[in-house]
Amino acid sequence: MKYLLLTSWLLFASFAAHGVIETYQFDTDLQRARYHHFIEELRCPKCQNQNLSGSDSAISQDLRRQIHRMIMDDKSDIEITQYMVARYGDFILYRPQFNAATAVLWLAPLGLLLLGILIWWRMAAMRARPKLTVEQTLSPAEAQRLKQLLSDDETVGKDGDDK
Image (cartoon, rainbow, N blue to C red):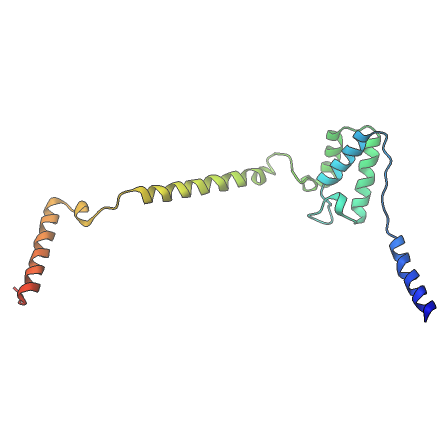
């Protein structure tokens, strides 16, 4: 029994040894910082809403390797970004560049904010407007006629008879 437990434990422990930990060598700390910036800011094409640093997919591993290679080849940040966008489209960027195709993404929050302010302003203006009474909306002749009808109604109620 003891050997069976030991064998099982060693078998399960060996599975953890198969996990791949990527380690890339950099010449400077600036290169390391650029690499980490890119893998945090670029989205995994397969995982949809996960950055390259948090994804274990094969394509993310390839992209991390490509980014490392481009940084070591002294490619600029603009060149690396353009390469990734040319290959995978604007989707790969968490913050896509402003152009005709992405204008809705950038302008929709501003439009919704302006719409909310407009609705709030209209509602506040409606509340602040003084409430009109019936007498204020009637012409003088109509107001006189209303007073007469009301006074007639009061006299009917007091006398108990209808005129």
